[in-house]
Image 1: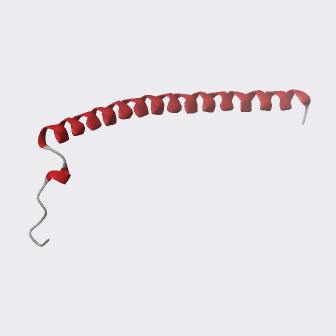
Image 2: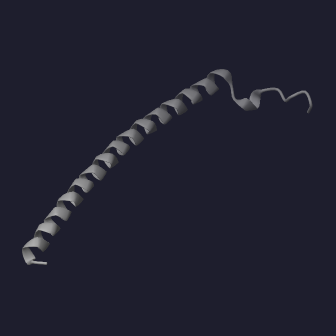
Image 3: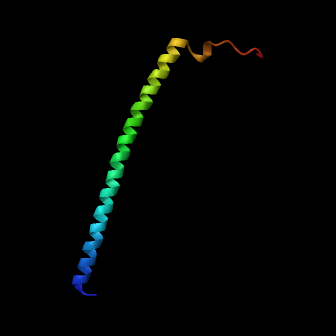
Length: 68
């Protein structure tokens, strides 16, 4: 295999690797955005839950079931 063919092969492989790296980077960025949105949603749900528990009392204030 000539040196020129080897260089062309290496350049081709590098181009494919560059494309793959860019695609992977795009996926990682998208996943980071999804994770951030999910973290905000979970924080909001926790806040709502705490507000509801504050309004209606805690579970420990309920009377025990009759079989006790």
